[in-house]
Structure formats: C-alpha cells, structure tokens
Image (cartoon, rainbow over all chains, first blue to last red):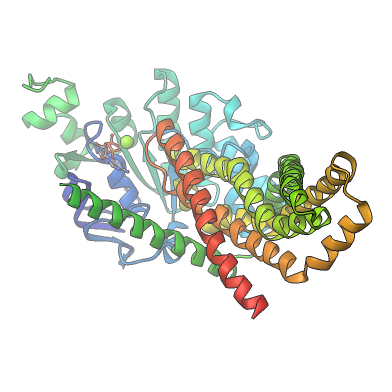
Amino acid sequence: MIEVRDVTKSFGTQQVLRGVSLDIRRGEAVVIIGRSGGGKSILLKHLIGLLQPDSGVVRVDGEDITAMNERSLLRVRRKYGMLFQMAALFDSLTVDENVGFVLRRQGLESETEIRRRIDEALDMVELPGIGNKMPSELSGGMRKRVGLARAIVYRPEIVLYDEPTTGLDPIAADNIDRLIRRVWETLHVTSIAVTHDMKSARTISNRILMLHEGQIYSEGPTSEILESRDPVIYRFVNGISTPQKSE
Amino acid sequence: MPVQLIHQRFRSFITQLGEISQLLMESIGSFRHQRPSWKDFLYQLQFIGVKSQSVVITTGAATGMVLCAQTFLQFHKVKMDTATGAVVSIGMSSELGPVLAALMLTGRVGASMTAELGTMKVTEQIDALRTLAAHPVDTLVVPRFLALLASAPLLTAESVVVGIVSSWWVGVNLLGIDSAYYLVNMTRYTDPPDVLTGLIKSLVFGAIIAVVSCYKGLTCQGGAEGVGKATTEAVVVASISILIINFFLTLFLSRLFYS
Ligand SMILES: Nc1ncnc2c1ncn2[C@@H]1O[C@H](COP(=O)(O)OP(=O)(O)O)[C@@H](O)[C@H]1O
Ligand SMILES: [Mg+2]
C-alpha cells in the first residue's frame, strides 16, 4: 500500500535520509525504530507528503505522491490520520472542535451525527465528557489521546504515530500503546509508528524496521528483531552505548 | 568572501520575494477551491478591525495636531495662515494617514499574526492541519487577508478624519486661525483623488501586511527563538515595503489622477 524507493533528504549540508526504501502492506502494524535525531520524524512526514524528498519516490496505492502539489495531496491525505509527537492540538479550539475539525469542515453530515462521531471517538480513547476543555487544561497523555481521537474520527485507512509514548510516564505510555493496538484491531487500519521505546514497539507492532544512518538497516517480524544478535540491532534494542571519541 | 555573501543574500531576497508573491497568488486563487469561512473572517475582523481603532485614532489625532502646528508656524511667516487646513487635509488623506495607519497595523496586527502562525508552525499545528486535509492558505491566510483588506481602508479613513478634526481644533482654538477660512480652504484644495489615493494605498498596504506576516509565520523555523526572529522580520520587511511602495504609489497615482 505504501512503497518508498531510494528517498534522500538533506537539510543544508546534513543528509538525514540516504536512500530509504521500504514497503508497507495493507493492514500491517509496523514500527520504525532508530536513534533520536536519526530522521524518523522526517521519514514519517515523507509518507504523508508533509515533506518532499530531494530524490526518490513515495507511492501510496500506486500513486506517486512526490510529484503532487499541496492541493492534490489533500485528497491523498484523507486516507491518513496522524498523531504528532506533541499531539499538535489546535490550541485555540476546544477538544470537541479539535476532534470534529475534519467532519465540520467537510460539512457532509448533520450536527447530531457529527456529535455522535466525536463522542464515539472520545469514548474509544477513554476520555468521555471532556469535550468542552481546552488543550492547555489537559495532561500530556490526555492530549495525545485527544490527538488520536482527532486522527481516527474520520476513519482513515492508515494511521501514523510519531513517538506516541515519548514524554509520558510508564502508565500513560502503556495506556497509549493499548489504544494503538485497539485502534489497529478494531478499525482494521494500517498502523505505522516511529519510536525508540522498545517496550512500546513490542506491544504495537508485528513487524519492525530499523532506520540507521539514514537507511533501513534491517527489518523483520517483531520477535525476530528484538532477539537479533546483529551488533547494531542488539545494542539499540538493549540500550548499550558504544564508547565514541566524540562523546 | 564578501562577494559570495552578497550573492547569497541577494538570492535569498529574490527567493523570498518569489515565495511571498506565490502566497499572494495562492490566497487570491484559494476562492476557486474553498469558500472562506465566515466565522474565521468575522473573528479576524473583530481582532484586526475593531480592536485596532484606539491605536489608529491616537496616531491620527497626534499627527493631525502636530502637522497643523508645524504648518501654521511656517505659513504664518508668509501670512498664509488659512492655508494650513488644506495642507493638513491633503497630507493626511493621501500620505500620512495611510502610511502611519499601516505602520501601526504592522506593529499591532502583523506582529501578532506572525507570532500566532509561527507558534502553530513550530508546534506542528500547521502540519496537523495539512494532515487533516485542510490547506493552510484556505484556513489561515485567507480569513486574515480578507479581514485586513476590509479593515485597512476603514481604519485609515477613521485615522484621517480624526486627524483633520483635531487639526481644526488645534488651529482654531490654540493657534487662532479663523474657522470658516480654515474649512473653506481645506475643502477647496482637497480633491476626491487625494482621498482616493489614500484609500487605494491603504488597500495595498493591508495586503502587504497580511501576506508578509503570514509568510513569515508559515515559514518560521526552530522553537521560541525562531518565532521571535520571524516576528521581527515580518515587522521590518512589511514596514520597509510599505515605505518604499508608498513612494511609487504616490508617483503612479498622481500620474493617473492628474494628467
Ligand atoms: N526543518 C529542519 N531543518 C533543518 N534540519 C532539520 C529539520 N527537521 C529536522 N532536521 C534535522 O534532521 C534530523 C532528523 O530529525 P528527526 O527526523 O526529527 O529525528 P527523530 O528521529 O528524532 O525524529 C535532526 O538532526 C534534525 O536536526
Ligand atoms: Mg522525532
């Protein structure tokens, strides 16, 4: 469903992606792991056309999205929901207005139907009855759950998660992981997350890709990657640093 | 080295000019894709138009008064006291009114628009908007652009009227000019093109403030520091553009109206 071929991306002199190729099939739950600052967010943003590569191709359902302008991309993006690292809720709108943003803009449904779908989404993320609050009144974990509700309320086919558990306490993190898992199981979406949290990766994926030095270093079923003896993967999964001259 | 630096600066200047023009074209072209939201437009109109009045009125009054006093002091030497009103009214409606109102709006409205959009950019709210299949130009730029186009001429007119009235008050009550002559000379020498010049200018300035501020906000990079930098740049670029373009508009419009 998503094909990435030889994507490169530089910022100034710093080459962040150095020829990334990967395939994601419909209905998969994939996690992309890699070090902080390694270009995971950048890669994720290429999948949905928020960034355009310097070279290479990204195809979604066979359509090359790297050649599209912003207006054509809007149509492709209807297939996607995305949860941002800091949730990126619109801070001038209430929780309700955030979650119902797309539905109200499309204006296809009656207000009662929109209300029903907002409530359904908020129930799904276990936050019923907070619709009138402003994002600034919520905790980090609640914000992410509202962000998730906003991303799934219009029933996307693909949901992207940028470090869903980063910055949360272990309980809140586990809560989010369970929700991601539930969204994948009950809504039958294709789930793509980037993270460096291995516990989270174990819970929410059935396949892991490792991004290392701007390329996909390795990929395989979750258990296989987590038990890999390859030194690079092993050190990352188990959190073992190597002495470096620069550190 | 310096040559390279100049080259680089020049290129970035031209690039920005191109991108700002592109944003302008996209804002105008946006109507074909999406009808502007009334709610957002009215909200911006309230913020830009209604709440900027105190600033603009104060500026107009202060300028009118001081312009009157200065003109009178010079004209008095050649016994042309009653021409003061004409100078003030033409100066206010075609030059000082639109320019000063625009500069005040740049500071009050432009800066806050850049800061708001810039904060949305660095907190990924703009990206979130784009994933929710909403074009940032349709949803954020167009309501602000329209609200500025609607309010800039009205605020300018308000500023000019207040300026003229306060100059009349100063002239008659403090400087002892004859009220009737003041008013007669003022209306005799002030022509509709003078007023029209001011209003056309204010429309152009409103568009500049909106497009430059939104551009600087949407292209903001980095965290809080980036937002601060973008805001400063927006104010500087918009103010300088207003001053430069004002000169050319004066030349162009006077040709248009008086030849
Ligand atoms: N807009 C940008 N301009 C310049 N450099 C950027 C930009 N966005 C990201 N980078 C750089 O790209 C690298 C990868 O960033 P990112 O994808 O956010 O890493 P992570 O894997 O932690 O998500 C970082 O070193 C960052 O400094
Ligand atoms: Mg990141």
